[in-house]
Length: 164
Image (tube, rainbow, N blue to C red; front, side):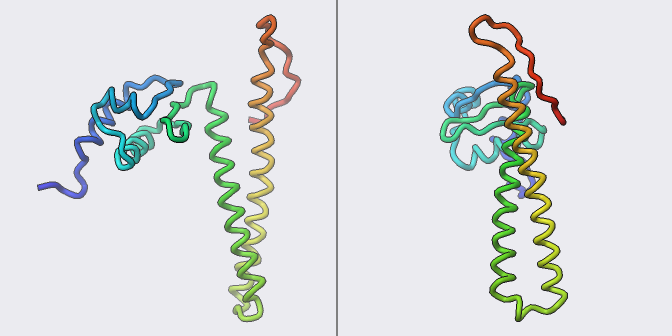
């Protein structure tokens, strides 16, 4: 009899596999299936994501293909993707807040209206910070690409001060 809180065989096998993956590895779903003998169905992909989260292994999804395990070179990209997700979620929340205020402000109780107005200010602050962070991350990523000249493979001066 299976217990609800008992780890599945697939989860345990994926956990063993995740601990052997070196940083910077690019893994296709087919390769993971080959290495673990676990078919990469949507359920098993979700299990793998859970294993990676449990072991604090960051990754970049490769749409429809697989994942890339984060390393020192892709750390900024991982974080910038998270910032973009936060910004997009805040945009949706801000839009909902604005719509509720515009449609129902005359019907809202004073304390509810005050909460929604304060929430709008919080959304605005988050968006301003996220916008600045996105610019900084893009600048850092572009700067890192410009550091090495492809012509002579020499390191070029960056001239960009980093805030992180």
